Image (cartoon, rainbow, N blue to C red; front, side, top):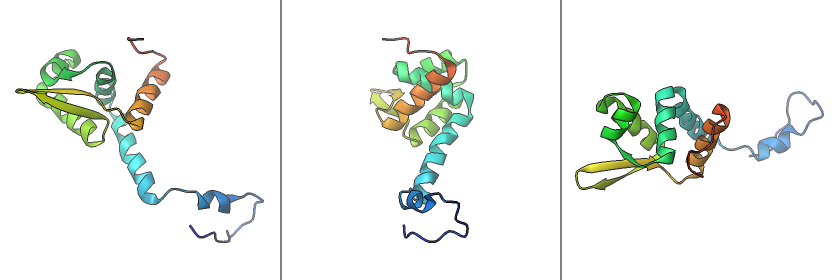
Length: 120
């Protein structure tokens, strides 16, 4: 980004900061990812999938929700890249993806709730 003169000089190096500022598209991507946290059901579902791989039927029982409702949340988490799925015969299994974003979300949830992973 080309450094431009700011209207007010406050003695700070805002121009240098702007040189390293990510693009608007990068911030949009982060914003879309953070939207996944605006639903407590999705946060809980994601946290569960950080610790186990499960099918929709079992997840529905764990969440005390209908399969279509769980599937809706799984689609959103998958489109955000936070979970992945694999098919085994007719069954589809879901788990947290092995990405930096998923790891950060997992850590954020556990830090905020002051809990730790059930598995060492």
